[in-house]
Image 1: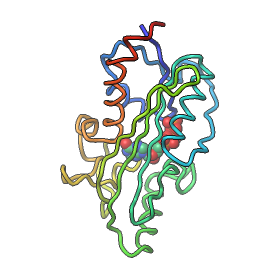
Image 2: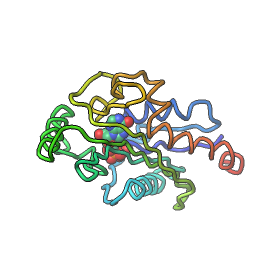
Image 3: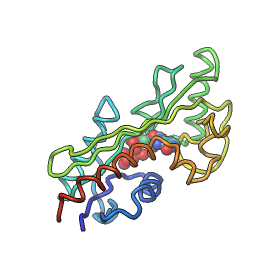
Length: 203
Ligand code: ITT
């Protein structure tokens, strides 16, 4: 069976991604399996660059094929912010309620709280030093007038998803997987793994 490392330090991503890759003929091990790997600096200007950078780094350190993703929230009224800086927005140690308040203040300064927005997820699989697969998934929505819901993680409470009439923190894990940026990107990875990579790779 092929073994790959799931190269993320975010336990919420691990939970969602494990469910999205469930049942595949691949053993996906987490970074906790290796212990104490220092994360790389995310210096890329795009989600794609950062996903590839993380996957390359963890593949080199672990010697295994590595699956990494970079994701974040783009708010149109803020010119795409917080974007690739979503995890660091407002300071790495700031809480999500603090990040929301800062975003609402920026939106108010930009002329109103309402804005279209999207979550983006770029996934990359690196084997050796080659990016063997890359894909991007997005989900379109609006910024909620106030944070709502307790499911999910990160910016989900302020991301209103019109087809459900609720934020992504108010929908079930199953619904989030079905409609989210991460769901779309990892379903594309899954199709590729099943269709080619797992048939041609033997480790
Ligand atoms: P790794 O780099 O180790 O994977 P990270 O959390 O630092 O972990 P990113 O640099 O890709 O990952 O930052 C992504 C941030 O974007 C994440 O911390 C959230 O703030 C936000 N985000 C991404 N996907 C999200 C989702 O499904 N729901 C809510 N917020 C999300």
